[in-house]
Image 1 (spheres, rainbow, N blue to C red):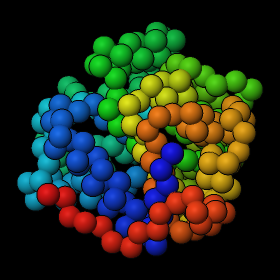
Image 2 (cartoon, helix red, strand yellow):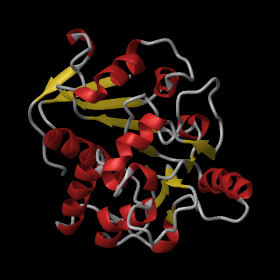
Image 3 (tube, helix red, strand yellow):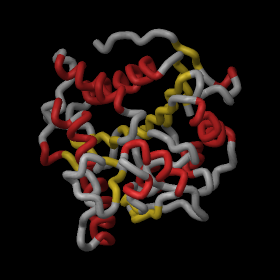
Image 4 (cartoon, helix red, strand yellow):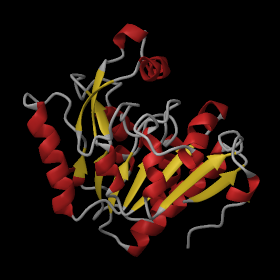
Length: 256
């Protein structure tokens, strides 16, 4: 596990975008795993800028999103379909047929989960998976529980997660109680994993991810076993880590 620490959110976002852009440049038909929430927005803005500058081309890229709310219409402005279109897809030249997001409105939700994993496998697997992390160390919507869920599944959202996401809704009551999410096993199969975290409220989750016992009660702890994980943090998110365990960087080199 490599840990890189930057002074602020803007720099960590640029670095994450640079890594993803490099992946696309090296392999134009890359399979990207994408995340939602406030953390990756800066990364997406930087990717859009690089696309507009002609540095990267998304025409052959395929994407798979981690999750979607259950029974929230995709045209709802809080759905992750809406989020991804608004923050990335509408601004780049990606083929819409290559975009995959779990369908929380599916009539047969179990079949939707099963097929989502099959499509990922049939694509050749995710080359680089972008992750955020919850205050309770959830990745995707894999909440603390008694076992690691291997495959895409329906999950009941922890109350702390709903409260954290309530800022995007008019009230807590409007926040869905369930979501469809790639399982920790699905995430773990990605060839490279890029986890971003910003702010002191993520410091404990990051500490437990790096140093804690590997347990489903800390879903992100499973990343300790992955062969290629990069944590990109700001100084606040890294505040509980030992200095010797991470690199502190203050500049971002340009993508060439």
